[in-house]
Image (cartoon, rainbow, N blue to C red; front, side, top):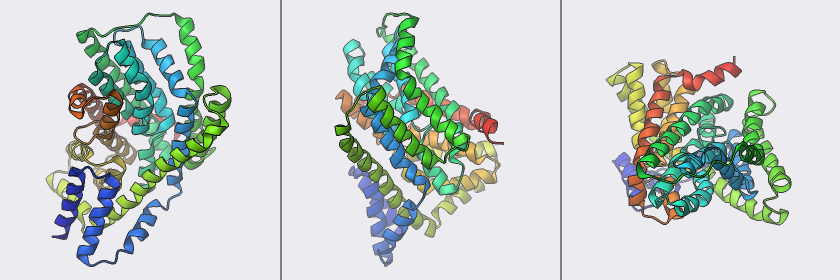
Length: 425
């Protein structure tokens, strides 16, 4: 009865459009009240969920992304992407994907990427003759590479939950992220040819070189983060601080995109964004504790293993479960609640933990662009000023493409394990 009350309250909150963090908190409070448990456990378990050194990465990387975005880096990335592929049919759509792949090395979050790239690319694509739903769908879909190509906030959460190496997970996401980007570029090109979308003029290698110099500092940031972590020069948490300092120097002195007077607003915006994420982590931890006390994760794991112990079938079942969950639950909440029991199942049937973490995160990233609750869909549709129904129709070719890449990564472990094996012996 109490479990029904817990999930019923959570479902009603989601239907009413309540933010996921509030929904988790309300559902947990209703359960605890019904069970007669003192509500003082809520702050205790919230703090336990947030009390992690690794979680300090989140404000660092959020601040770095906001500094680079405020410093004019988004425009430079878009110009570089357009210089490289803008002359191909559907060039602005291709540039949108390329820009997202580069911006992924800065933000680590899909929603931030949708807002930053979308603010530049969606109006530009519409002005050039692309229809609004397509422009919005490309932006939303391409943003999902943000948490796959390092740095990645969801992978930081996984490291906090399980003790897995964040550095290894960062490296494991690089190749799958690039594959997702290539797959979406192929999809954009095919659709653009069928619909006769425009292409720009080739402006020569000189233009590519000039725009690459402008985008160089953004691309270098990813290298600095990975080299520092893999080389043992700093931890992921220290890397986030280094990236924020790097973004400040580059944005202020190289791109000159913002003034010192703008820094307070950037800091406040970053604090609000980071606070929302960390609060969600705390509330999800309370919800997760309730599920654990009711042995629901253990029941899910037992049910899976009762069905089969075949590794490949387990991968299929996990993918189906996470794809469904990703359609209505926020990524971080889903990771905190489901990742530990599913990891136990994966390890039991012989799946490498780093490999599992990679395709689990990709699953939930796809959920960000899956109707009806995909957050990136809402952000992108809002920028394009179109309905959720319009973007939901336009997103399906990209969802199919990303799901194909997901299954490729799921069933070919070396795609994600190759880079970590090179740097971690």
